[in-house]
Length: 127
Image (cartoon, rainbow, N blue to C red; front, top):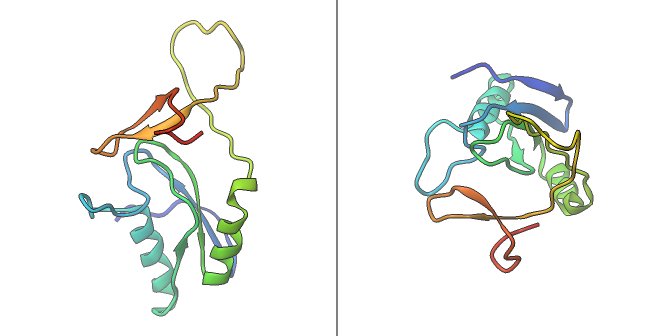
């Protein structure tokens, strides 16, 4: 197991950096190494009855910050207000870019093989 990159920790939260190509949580098809398993192992080393609860996830190919709650109440509070949370994404691009910065609004959908893609169809994607 790779060392967990902890950004912040207190008695209610564990905030960690997720590397790309790592699942946040296990899927039906893949139950290999996950960020959730690494976080759970970490808190159980402190005290075997400790638990972590996933607040949100990032796609497998996305790196970034993931929040874990250390109790069910904190998890519920964070998830209940998740839609009010401001999330920002940074993309690195190669080549010449016409604009220094921009906002892209797109619907993200997922294939049966769990690959995410952008679509204009709001019926199959999530803004």
